[in-house]
Image (cartoon, rainbow, N blue to C red; front, side, top):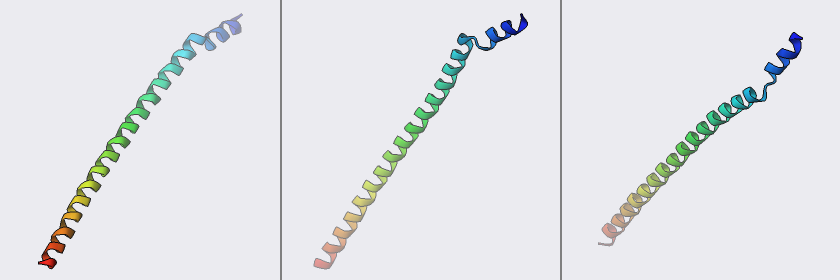
Length: 69
């Protein structure tokens, strides 16, 4: 009789579903945080590349004007 009672408590679907939901919420949150970090890093690198390109183009044009004059 005790064995049947233990089986019911061990395999209670309510308990297992609650644990699964908690685990899924934690994983989803962590994935969202990581994705947001990746997006922010991509934006930063894009801004750095744009600024570097503008500075490089400015220097090249200044050198071209200097040598023409």
